[in-house]
Length: 65
Image (cartoon, rainbow, N blue to C red; front, side, top):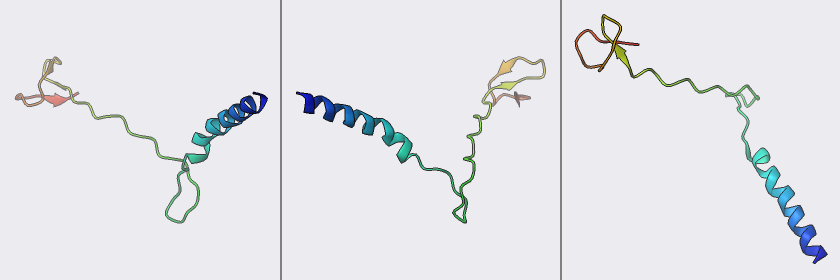
């Protein structure tokens, strides 16, 4: 029983550290470590008319907000 508890505890420690080991750091073309680029926010899909109200982007005079 004691061996089973020790084995489960060891398995828990190993499973907890796997994501940290598997995470791939960012590298440049020369193989040096660099800061990973952040993802850009999604572009606005809403458009406004001349009066400033939200309208469909395909309508006449609509500009991206």
